[in-house]
Length: 165
Image (cartoon, rainbow, N blue to C red):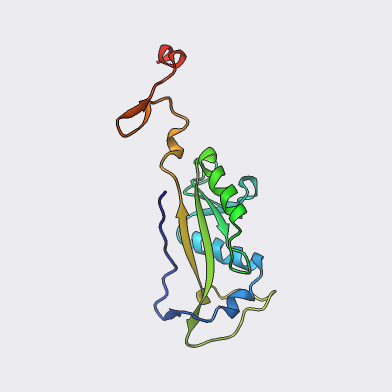
């Protein structure tokens, strides 16, 4: 399993040790912040409802390419439910996607410490998105008829498939 993480570049911001303002965000605001974060990175961001997550990322137009990433946004309480995580992780290889867990956190900005109230426009510079990509190296190979092995042992290709090769 591979894992990477990154956050939005903030030159004048420091990570906040007080997480109270982040907890005031609704789930819709969190998704909006994550959507903006990935849009700024150059992805086309769409709803991930059909895949069981909040967002799906495309490198180009959805008519030209398949999405490579499903994004799950951490909830308002900041906790991950292990059942949800297990379900998403198990589904990703069949969907040929990498799961990204995205957490929104507040950064301290020197000039303004005000809260974003539910219904106001979001000041994206006050928030950073931490990403954790969870993928498996086996997912892309499950659809191919090639021998798979561990160490020196290989899994034989069934005779019916050998005749087609």
